[in-house]
Length: 182
Ligand code: ADP
Image 1 (spheres, rainbow, N blue to C red):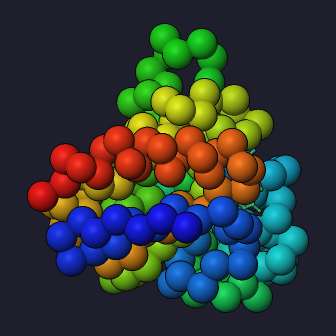
Image 2: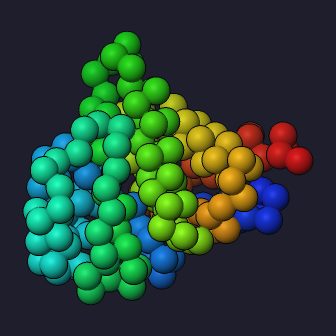
């Protein structure tokens, strides 16, 4: 576990399961159709129960890459799920980096609009969508820090990494970036 202070806020890096987090919101690595898939998405719908999908179906037609939508958390500990659609990695020359940054920003903006003060993120796009881990970590961490500095919110942002490799990479990138924080 690793914690860094950013102004009045805290950035946390933990190894674990996103569906077990007690933050006010958790972020889902969703797809454009907002139809439950594998990975994080499958785990969230399994544990949260059918009401999350019912709410998605009733409110949204889908969600373009880089954007996000919000539902309740169903049976999860988290009150909200923010469904954010990261880019599929196709070699790196198709705007993937900008789209991944936009995905994190969209999720954080929704959190701000809903007065959410604590949120957990998975490593969006690094599973089935094959985004290289280190580049994804740099984008994720720097985008979150930039947002927190600007808005002084959310008070807690937790990255929840599933694999040792992802946990080590996110921790290392945070160590490299955090000395520059004032
Ligand atoms: P994407 O389609 O955006 O790549 P995935 O869900 O396939 O999304 O994977 C995103 C990341 O989440 C991967 O690094 C994967 O190892 C990780 N992951 C899978 N299950 C969980 C879980 N229960 N909690 C947190 N992270 C998870």
